[in-house]
Image (tube, rainbow, N blue to C red; front, side, top):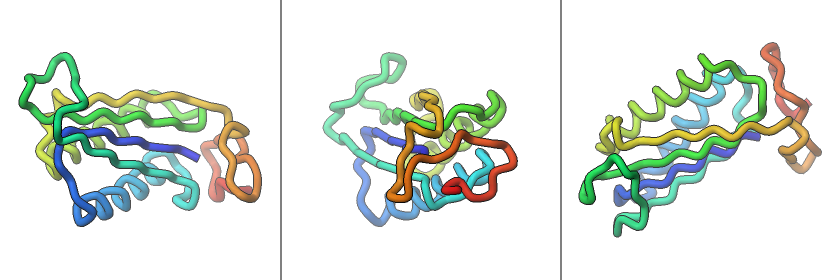
Length: 131
């Protein structure tokens, strides 16, 4: 059950975040070869600059993404997802790509639990992640 957490200094409202979380869910499922029913997305905004990235200027928008994912995805998959997220943060919210930071943390499937129980370890042929 991935949890993709977005933190940004951009002032966002529900009209912007709801379609974004839907887009992220579909993108993650496509790139990471999985379903959507277990994908969690959180968006937090800190317009008062309670968030910083050393390479960004003090008045520049910033976005940090923490991606907790099941282990097993290739470096190419992780890179494709990161590039897509960074590009969309720029296009949709005006965060320069240089001011985006994506961090992955990988876990075995049994670290992720739904009501039905833990997920299995990821398999590149998976079609239903809850089985």
